[in-house]
Length: 94
Length: 396
Image (cartoon, rainbow over all chains, first blue to last red; front, side, top):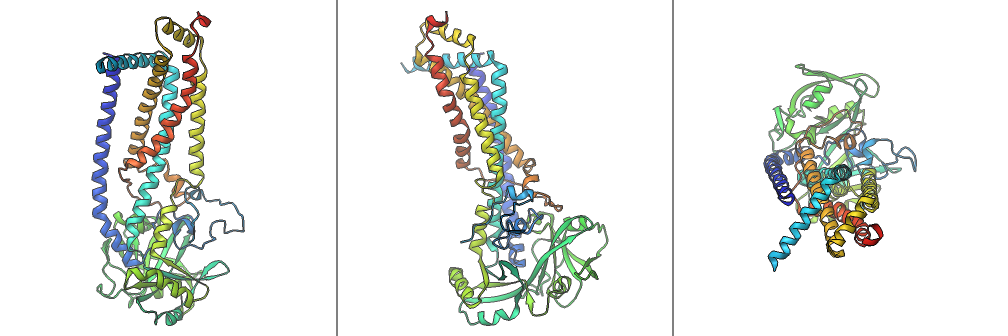
């Protein structure tokens, strides 16, 4: 077998795996779309403003309604000590 | 003519792949590191994309306007009487009071979000709610009732018990009975929630009568939200007025990979990889120089050897890119982005269970491609030129 044929077969196998993953993603997205109406109902009923992802600090639990200066809140210029703030950007206020 | 060109290209590709195989240890190392870099970068991007999309769609029904009181740069309770000057503003449909805050459970280190709500009109006295797996929401007429998530029930170690106590600021205990349980599929919103009526929340947090945490303003015409928000901020000095649009904007930037140390780390990894690729490709060994010299003696042109090196780089980078990108999808979709969860959940004790399914976007693919394969091809171009211009008589 020519090496280029081997490369082509490898690419085909990877493409098939990609197709399987894409299929799973589409199924999951379909399930999420069905669940979306329920989640939107919860948000509307309880007046929620944020996702409950990180609960370690109020500026990661409720970034949308936290104090504008809440990052570095301990004292001006303080370095944040919560790990999740490496992922969560400070909120830009208009 | 075209067939000849294709045949020549295939022959050069065959030779390039064989050449990669002969230096399997070196190229295998580059392949693994390249795959890992693409995997990390794409995973980070897919997790961010999935969370951003979830926030944009789920929070589309967030309150039209949230009004808070600020003092010395921090949020404080707002007087219920603040509703009075807002009443004449044309276009406001409804203003609701809400008390909410955090309760730190010292026994397990968990932070619960307590929400105290008035009974909702038009939904059977506030007892019906989407997203409850069992039971109902607390009603305004009965004290000491709470709806919680399954996650909170586990944290409180309630088991089959319905009753539990929380401490007020003066360390006296407030008792609650669980009357509703949020469905697990709403965990992305309700993982840490305890919903009770307004009076119970006021009692638990010892908030003075006549004060609440914020006011939720419903607007009849969504096109007027910004105008009404401006009027509210003019009527209430020192207030902070947050519109739904601002909430959604916040979630557009909050997971942005361009901010935060996570991105810096990943870009550092990418830069380190490009340097490695340059180093590996530019370090011409005696055998490689000899190989180029022999090829030139056999009649290969400089352009042929350049094409050979390009085929080598392209095959390696393309395979690594596809493998890394595929692994990233598997990591995000099947394992829920397990590697990044500790980063974006941090020290949270309550960890919501939710699945991630980012959209299949060509822009994401192109971004990762242009940040990984293109720099690699650029990094190997100059060494390839140096290798191709070796003079045959200088080696043999």
